Image (spheres, rainbow, N blue to C red):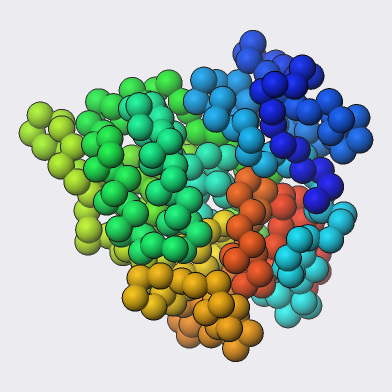
Amino acid sequence: LSRVLFCNPSESSALPCPRHPIGLTLPSHVCSSKLDICNFTAFSSARSCNLVCSERKKRVAGHMVRALGTEASQTLPFAATTSPSQEVLKIWRNADAVCFDVDSTVCIDEGIDELAEFCGAGEAVEAWTSRAMGGSVPFEEALAARLSLFQPSKSDVANFLNRNPPSLNPGIQDLVKDLKAKGVGVYLVSGGFRQMIEPVADLLEIPHKNIYANRLLFGSEEEFVGFDSEEPTSRSGGKATAVAQIKKEHGYEMLVMVGDGATDLELPVKDGYLSRSNFLALHMNFWCSKARRPGGADIFICYGGVQLRDNVAQAADWLVLGFDNLIKELKSSS
């Protein structure tokens, strides 16, 4: 992909954050040939500088970082729909509700990974997150396993939030603002935790009642005791359930889901696992998404601006690498 940067701490070139001393180190050959400085500046802006400047973001080394403001101009290494059909565009422009995933979609990072890093268990938890978002294990299994590795107390969560404000992806505030201006209902549907998502909703001016997420449970001494398993988003297929509930309760005719992981696509899983061959077969037969079943989301848009998972992107109705195209098409006539 063009405009895709691979961070390498051993290289010497770096772009500093305007607010903090820690910069993002970039390979020099990429800086000269691939980097669009104007677009990359978005990552160094005050609203998203946590991507490159805090201690918790040092782990971005080796991850994919995209210069925003444009879609990829070269062929993707797998089949994905970056040019949506007119039907998909019509639904996007006329949707009366949009549900956003939070981690790696609305926000730059994965909230549970960052909380785990704060509590000293980052690497082990991140490995489980990768498996869960890729669809290789049931979400409820991955959620329980990750929490068991670090068991955050109520004070751990509060201290983390105080030190680490939300890191929004560039363009999401403008997109949400434009959607709300059109009277579109905006929801946050996440496998993350309500305690960590409410500050995100506040930044986007989304009411807390429009959050569908998990809830951490604490004991009388504020110790971790588990999570609320009654929340639909705590298990595989839960986002599809939440989306269907939103659509039914509010009578929405066209609803769009935007996210980056298998839990956003909500694929059918056999025996708790999703094989690539089954995935592709289901996709070719148009039966791959629970979220798009009757009563669910009408289309699924894969946001690949932070994590680009080929299995999810291939099954999406539309793949975007930044929110600029969504904003542009939203303003187009239906």
